Image 1 (cartoon, one colour):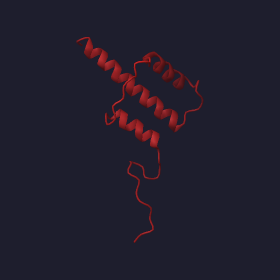
Image 2 (cartoon, rainbow, N blue to C red):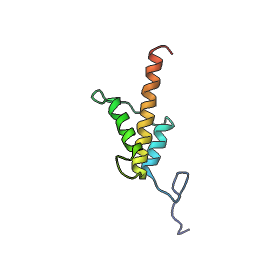
Image 3 (cartoon, one colour):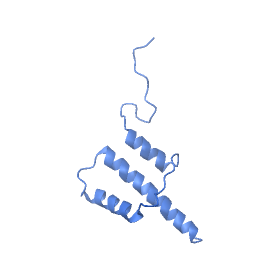
Image 4 (spheres, one colour):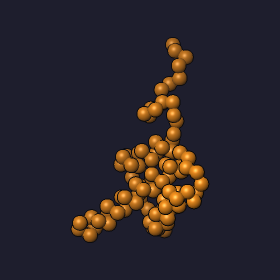
Length: 87
């Protein structure tokens, strides 16, 4: 029996990043998200812009994952809008 820890099931076993793993799942389509009826896509776009401009402070792995998830959600919304218009 080995005293080595169990391997972490992700690309970099030395770096544990649950937020990044969640963002990966959303971007890969493994996890399907949608806006709730009371959510506004423009608020999500404003969040992404604020994060990218530095208004929300320094980028950390959690903020980066939130932005990736928000972008994936906005891309899905844009694609569904384009499909609805017959494009």
